[in-house]
Amino acid sequence: MTAHKQGYLFGKSISSKLPTTLLAGTFDLALFSPSWDHRCESFTACEDLFIDTSLVLNFTLRDDFGHQLRHERNIYDFLERHSRTTVPIVGDAIDLQQMWKTIWGEAQKVARQKAKGLRILVDLSTCPRYYSLGLIAGVIKCGMTPSVTVFYAEARYPDDLQPLPLDRPFTVGQWRAVAVPFLLGMPDPLKKKHFVVSIGFEGLKTARVLTKEDPDRISILLPDPGTRPGYAEEAWNRNSETVEQFRVPESQIVRAAAADAIAAWKNLNSNASERPAGESSFYLCCGTKPHALGFALRALSLSFPTVLYNLPERHSFMDTYPNGVYWKYEIRDLTFPEGA
Image (tube, rainbow, N blue to C red; front, top):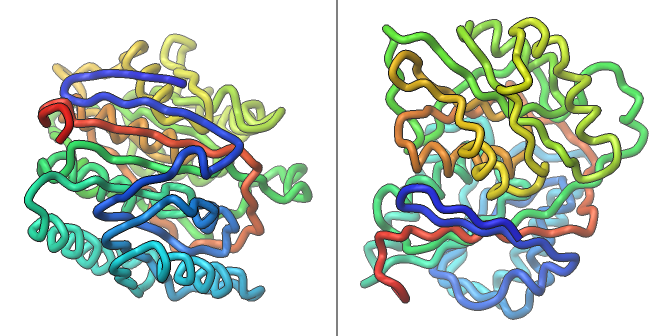
């Protein structure tokens, strides 16, 4: 377990080989994202989990093997038994404005119906970072919740992709860096730009985004240790040219377990590289979803960094399964009274 407190936020992480030991009880609001990625239905093993209102993202892009349709059916079957109200949100995953408008509108609707702060669950496993981080940041910044529970299933990727010299094909086309809702920060165009980059397996796209953004300085968040042997080395090798190009010193390389969001947040704080007096700070999410959550928590605590989501031209099919390790991150707003 990892625990960390910064400013008005406290967080802790715990992992298990059984999702049923992590998720139980009743939540007022939950966000789920069916996908061709088999991790999306991991939470359906939790028979002691109940939800008042479930938001389900039904993306229109499908895989050719029927995985997403089957996962949607399984998730809706579970929610029919475990959720009082289920709200399908249908659209294109990359239509950020319309999808986010609907997600946030539904969250506000639930908040207006409750006399006290909401208890919220977000399944981070397959949800695009723009929506998951935006909802988490929004409910915290707007004082809608005393606590958010985030669930994450680690991934096992196809073994036949290991030898590829180029990026693992999670996305198609070039990325465009877009600020996440409620994590816009306070960028100043008159200051230099400092980017903290979580690195992963799409090093070429990361390099192209950085070339376009033209930062004056970068720091690295490295997924070390990884979720399997060789994981950290692969991430490093796929991004080594960027590290060399920007002459990133060892002092500006932060290491945190690939799947531990709270460890990422904690280690970013221990090795603080921001210089707000002379630089605008940007957190660029190119690595794991838990590391992106670590960025969001640090940005909420500091208020001035901007968290950037890489919007692809299209998401790409990859036959991904859970590897048998599951995480729960509990995030608490300490300004709420104890027991709220």
